Amino acid sequence: MVYNGYMSKSNKDNKYVALTAAQEEYIRIYHTYFVLQWEHFDIQKHFKCSATKVSTAIKWVITNKGEFPSEYLIKGAIYAVRERLKQNRDLLDKELKKTKFQDKKFIIDLNNQLRTDEERLFKLQMLADPDATKDNGINAVDVLKLITAAKTT
Image (cartoon, rainbow, N blue to C red; front, top):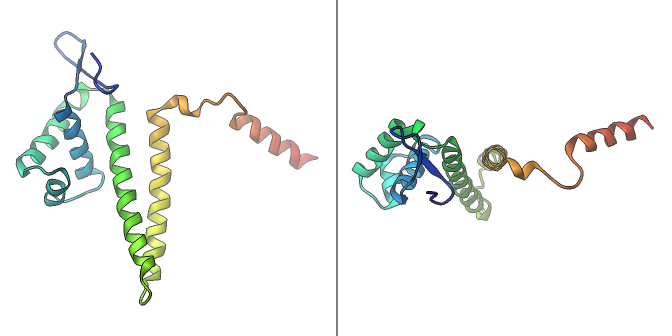
């Protein structure tokens, strides 16, 4: 049985079983804690849950990492990076709207973080969807050959 395209592996009979909506949320909470490095209070506020649920989610994912496909962890990491991108864009917009006392160093740092996170997001998306790199048109090797040929002529 497939739930949103992801399955969990059962150790008993080596078959896949569906992940529940709660388990999906546990993985998002786990990534919010470890990737975004949010505090428990911020996670509780964002997911509208208790401290117990946050602790349970983190423990559950750590305990059961080998029980579900790694692609699901990649999807959770993509979610976390998207959240960080959203936060940093909001911070950048607020700073750029200021008419006085703009912090140029802060703006440059935010732009660098955004660029790094966008690259990381792109790489994670390529891992999650390997077919996305396949194109019916020209591929990267052909482009490099064309550039090399253009330089020699």
